[in-house]
Image 1 (cartoon, rainbow, N blue to C red):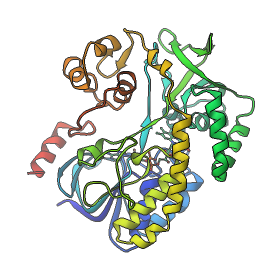
Image 2 (cartoon, protein in one colour):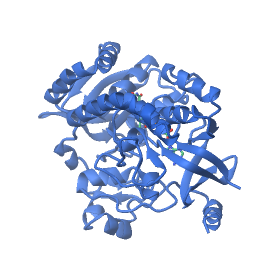
Image 3 (cartoon, helix red, strand yellow):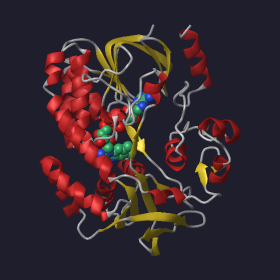
Image 4 (tube, rainbow, N blue to C red):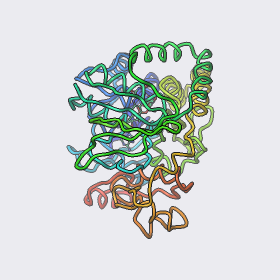
Length: 420
Ligand SMILES: Cc1cc2nc3c(=O)[nH]c(=O)nc-3n(C[C@H](O)[C@H](O)[C@H](O)COP(=O)(O)OP(=O)(O)OC[C@H]3O[C@@H](n4cnc5c(N)ncnc54)[C@H](O)[C@@H]3O)c2cc1C
C-alpha cells in the first residue's frame, strides 16, 4: 500500500516548506519529500547542525501542524496518476499517493564548459558552499569565485566567514548593467539592504565586473585560473575555483508529469496551478526569482491546494513584487555571447560520457547528439550538459523519460509493476 496524503509536496526548500505549512493549516494530511536528510533546500541547508534563521519559524510551524517529512528520498518516476515512485537508502523503492501535488523542486547551478573545467577543485559556487556546510575545511584556502549572479556574493561571504581567502569575485556581467540593477533595488528596499550588507561583509575582496574565467590550470588538480577582463588576460593562483553562471530550474519531474512550460519554467495560473489538474508548482521551478518570491509562491500554492483561494489572494502582492525583482535580475545577469567561445573543440561538454564540443557540433540537434554521442545520457541525465548545450548550441532537451534520477534496477522493475 502506498502512503497516502491529501497534499504531497516535493522539495523541502523555502517554497516547499511554505506550501506544506499553509496546506496543513486546513487540517488535511500533508507531507514533504526531499532527497536531503534535512529540510531547508539550497539556501537554508543546515550547516554545522544549525538551521538558518529564516528556516526556524517555518520548521516550527511544520512540526506544530504535523507535516510529515519524508527525508533522504528521491522521486524518480510517476507510475500512475496520483502516485509517485521514490527511492531511499533506508526504504529502497516505495510509493506515495496524493490528492494534490505541489512541486517545489528548486533550481541548480548552470555550468559552462571551458578548458580545464573538469579539473579537481573546480566546483560549482553553490556546490562548494554546500560541501563547506557539510564539513569540507576551507580555512586558509585561496578561492576565486567566478561566473554570474548574486549567488557569487553569497558564496564569497560564506567562504570568508569560514576562514577562506577569497582572492576575487569575477562577474561576467558588465558594470553598466549592474549599476542599472542597483538602481532598480530602490523598489525593493529589503533586497537593497541585503545587497549593501553583503558588499560590506566583502570589503577588501576585489569584485571585477565584465570579467570571466577562460581556463583552469593545473596537472592533477587546480593550481590557478586564467581570467579575462576587456583586453587583459592574467593568471590567478588558487586552491578552489567556485564557478556558476546563474541558475536553471529543475524541471524534470514537472516535464515527466506533462506540465506545460513557459520560457522561464513551469507555466502556472494565478493560484500556481500547472496545466495538469491537481499539480501545483512553486518556487524556482516556475522561474528564477530568489527567496521572497519562492516563499510567496509556496504559500499561494499551499493555500490553493487546500481550497483557500481567497486567503491565497492576500499573497499576490508579495508575489508581484518578487516577480518584478526576478525580471530585474534576469535583465542584469544576461550571459554575454563571448562565453560561447570558451570551450575549445577538444573541451569536454558532457563530462559523464566524455563528449567533446567538436563531437556535439558534428550533430544537427539534441536528439542526434544523444543518439550519436551519448551526450546527456550519463548519470546526471543532462542536468549539467543540457543547459550548457542549450546556451552553446541553442538546442533544448526534447523529452524527459523515467527515471528522472538514477535508480536501482530493482526499484525500476518494482515501480513499473506497481504502475500496471
Ligand atoms: C546550489 C545553490 C545554492 C544557493 N545558495 C543560496 C544562498 O546562499 N543564498 C541565497 O540567497 N540563495 C541561494 N540560492 C538560491 C535559492 O535556492 C533560491 O533563491 C530559493 O530559495 C529556492 O527555493 P525553492 O524552494 O524553490 O528551491 P530549493 O531551495 O532549491 O529546494 C528544492 C528542494 O527540492 C529537492 N528536490 C528536487 N528534486 C527532487 C526530487 N525529485 N525528489 C526529492 N527531492 C527533490 C532539492 O534537493 C531541494 O532540497 C542557491 C541556489 C542553488 C541552486
